[in-house]
Length: 142
Image (cartoon, rainbow, N blue to C red; front, side, top):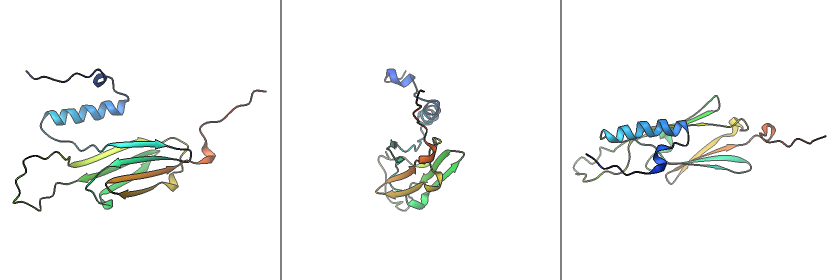
């Protein structure tokens, strides 16, 4: 019998995507494997959306960023280096493996001006808003 920590919020996923991610990540962890799911911050300001990925230890060439039908997908792989074979690891807590995260972008973005930069372990995507495609408008009552 194993003891499992109870958290009331564990059983209420915030979205279907979170439910699917949680299902696969927890089932991999239970079987002794590891899954690399980078943490992501999503920010909105008046001119753009920003997505920040915490992915230390990668190079900028390790990322694949695709936009298909307003779905932005960022994928890559973090590999465990086999260069130092004479070392005996006592603990490996960093996560390795391939990852893929997808985001459904709103209609008011300018997909032609999306840019990405990688600095100090953070991949930053800047997704400018298109002023011509404003989602919010005020309707005047006559």
